[in-house]
Amino acid sequence: MDMLRFDERCSMISDLNKQIKPLRLTPFKWDILYRNEAVKCFHQHLPISCVVVSSALVETCLCWEHFRRKPKEERKTIELDEFRFVSLNSLFDEYIDSDIPLESLMDTDEPQFTAIEDLKKRSKKERREAISRIRYVLTRNKFTHGDLFYLRVSLSNLIPFNKEELIDYGIEDKEWWNPSFETVAYVHLSKTLRFMKAFTDLLIEKTN
Image 1 (cartoon, rainbow, N blue to C red):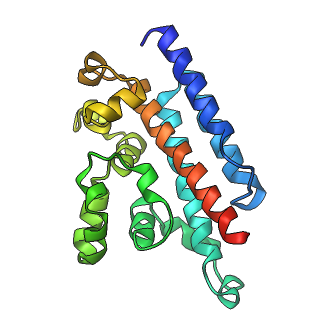
Image 2: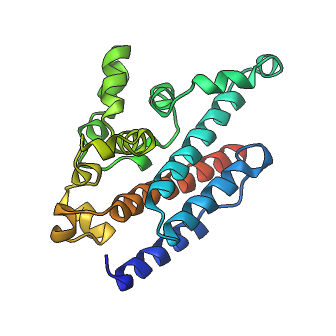
């Protein structure tokens, strides 16, 4: 990726980040720290770290939303240790029936996006299998577990192939056929920041 295009994407990422309203979503402002770190990783040409940290941001916010939605009497007895067993896949599964804007993390050309209502009606096993194929979840898992280094997935499978969506991201055909880690990180972080904006807007609206 040439530096001019990279600088343009850094500017777009920074603009997206600025659109997120200041709202503490986790204790100790972990969400803000994770978000700023994810943006910093992208700016510093650290695409693998960017994907891992931005995924952790979403996972952390959804974990604490899980905690907040529990009855008050249950919150006092909750063991933080239980969060160790919560995965992004299970959090998607938990919130697929809710008002959480998970569609912000999905591409419009994904079958799961167009069939999100159908997902709600599927069996637990079928839902989990479908969720594991959502690009955001798949990208997170591949980057975090190092599966990419065993050539088990093509990087072009981790970004949308819909022409209009690629134009929105500024990705041309040549780049789509042979995307870099930075291209995947750019798309993944863009989805993360769009989700954070929609999520904070939702929570602010619910408190007004």
